[in-house]
Amino acid sequence: MNENMETRMYVGKVESRASDDGQKITIVGQPVVFDQETDIAGLWSESIAPGAIDQETLRDVRLLINHDFNGIPLARSRRNNANSTMRATFNDFAVDMEADLDAKNPKVIEVDSAIKRGDISGMSFAFLVDGEEWTDLDSDYPLRTITHISKIFEFSICTFPAYE
Image (cartoon, one colour):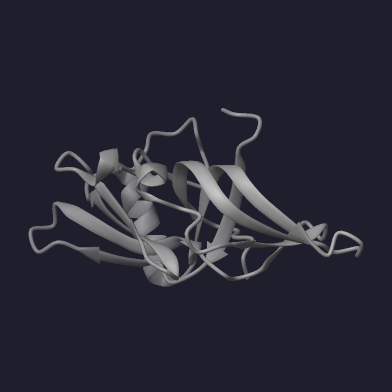
């Protein structure tokens, strides 16, 4: 996809609910959280600053399973307009995501079951960074604060999230 693309995962509340007519399943979660440090492979700690994401960052985001770029997206934001099957908004604490999924799609049925059973509880995202600050560079465990994300490619519903 892009050699500079990064992925991060977060264990947050992911919920699933069915529509009254049974035609869609709605997934709600937070694929990005701000001001929470996480360990990146034991090499550094990382946090995403509030304000690192803006409306342009969320202009065209797809919903995937486990970052499978070869799979068919479950939903897409498309600038959060009327053609969007996923909506993404941000506040001072996180990016909130709500996606309306096709209840007849076999992958959606699997994901819905795994979320409801608690087998999947995390979300993630793939992104490009164009603003960062490093502190504690003299230590064995510096802190990277991401101050701006230029693009989010996708949100993923994840089996093994990195943010504990």
